[in-house]
Image 1: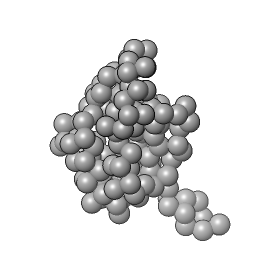
Image 2: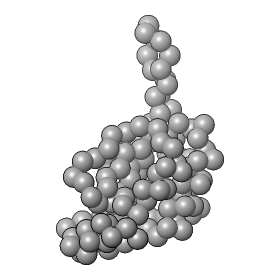
Image 3: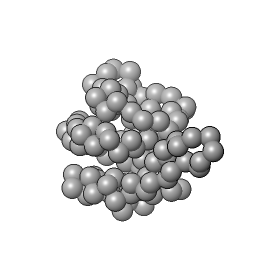
Image 4: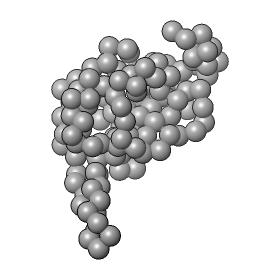
Length: 129
């Protein structure tokens, strides 16, 4: 593990929820479902910044997985159809939840998003589903 991340984990007394194998399975599965155009946002343990919702390259995300504190899936996919027609919204909740269930990955619901936790701090108390 990266020494920088190891120091942060120890200093903040973080507890790992996901291991490298689970991250690989999650990234592989969603990589195969790239046609769903699911957007995610995530927070790294090394920053207070939350990286906003956007489509993702799952292989690149896997490379950062050792530093991911949490990752949110936005189940609503918007498809732009033109200036005169409103965007088409598609709910991908079933597909996302199916993958998480099949892989045995616990998640919580934060606002209207599905959150997968990489690490928990002492003050984080998610209600896992």
